[in-house]
Image 1: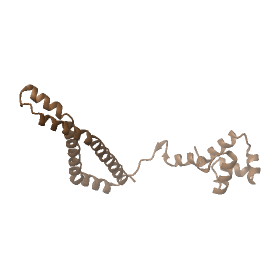
Image 2: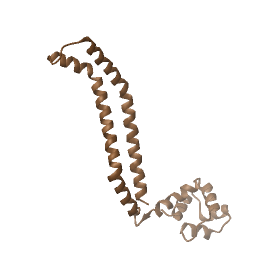
Image 3: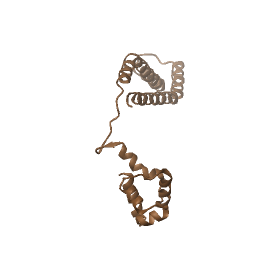
Image 4: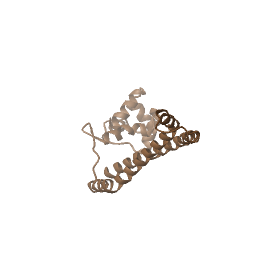
Length: 182
């Protein structure tokens, strides 16, 4: 929808004629007609007055015009690709950042594995002694409960650490997209 169509639609919704709008804005009826036919554009001060008259903001009057400017023949314009940035991003990510990402993922998985093993320590100890692979000792059972407590304390840390890394990777991907596309 063009600016003229927006103006005409807003005027008809308020049940005003071109003559009435012209009188309120101290312009001629032909001027209002030219605005609605997109032959001319009202200046910013007149747009503000039109917005007040129609009960719309200037942004609402221009919003459809902005949408149309971003479209060509009914299709949205494709953003241009910055090929040098694309090559740089691929080179950096493949050679340097991939090793950092693999290391970070390995750390997160290790942190979670240790946390769950600590939480399951008493169950593992009781299972091993029940099968007969190890003799029962009260001190080891007590230590397994200490490990379980440590695991429960590490759980929120592991969760927060994972969330921070995930947010970082999402921001990093968005940054790369902005770098590549103009």
